[in-house]
Amino acid sequence: FFSEGRVMTKRPGPSPDLWAGHDPQALKKRCLSYWAEQSDTEAGMTGGIPPTFAAADCKESLEFLVVVQAERGGAPFATALDCGAGIGRATRAVLLHLPGLRRVDLLEPAPQLRRKAREDLGREKQVGRFFPQPVQDFTTAQRYDLVWIQWVLMY
Image (cartoon, rainbow, N blue to C red):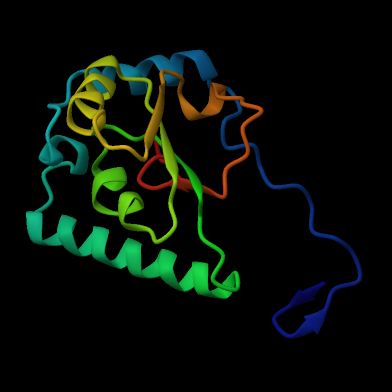
């Protein structure tokens, strides 16, 4: 182990539990309530950031994934899971543009956002299933080449 360029002789102690004293179900309910109040628009998903920033965010995300794909020897991300997909903003602007993508599934617990994503993306041949769970409750036997989690973990 290293610390400021020196070898440490013992392991650092455990990290403090940031969720200690918090009820996970209450936190989940509060997050779902927040998203239930947001509009099913891009501005609603991004907290009203300017469209130019949202466009740059998607452009940079796609460029990042192309670099990661190259680092994987060019192997395509054939299957992807968009976690906290909202209205499908990242699926539409990023994931569907990945070379070699065959299917992307969307994971979104907020019914009105999932409904909007299905309306907007349901006819896309690469869009697969729409899962209604929050990310912390999701389990699957499906293997994904890419699990996309963007703007989600803070909720």
